[in-house]
Length: 244
Image (cartoon, rainbow, N blue to C red):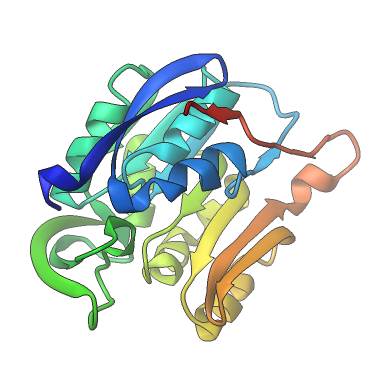
């Protein structure tokens, strides 16, 4: 990612005034996530401090969104791409409840090559190659289940997955831990993956979906436990307006 391609965008969201550093070609993410609430989860009535896990955090726009909805929420961001990671750290530096982890998640641990997309850092991938990918870098990869155990993530309110092809591997690794997740917001990149994701979340119900193309989109799931009597589930909306 060339430094000259990065712009600083002033953002007003949830009563906060922030400056977000983001590649010029990806400024659309600010509107998509902050205003249109493309990754809106369900609010829940469970007591205690919320926990949000953002896998494929990119430059931190979803982390900012989650923080604006709940400034006390503990937010874990996983991002392996070095240049993107640098922007992520800059963007969340003033958000004390956000913790950044410089690795990718999958169903294995070790060092692997991350394929870098020339035009869109949001498409960097451990598994996807081909047109648009012009380089690769070695990155740390951690087994998702092991990462959750290491961090003591026994209860997660929102799990957001946007990893350009590793989503199924991550959900498979988490296995029974998914029973302690309230909302899963997951991007899919093939019809086979979408069907496998559905099968891996039997205790969840779909409450939203958006197709970006024939075989790519986002599906949002809520745990059936939130839909039982005594729990109130409300779709969260946008958090503010972009400054001109």
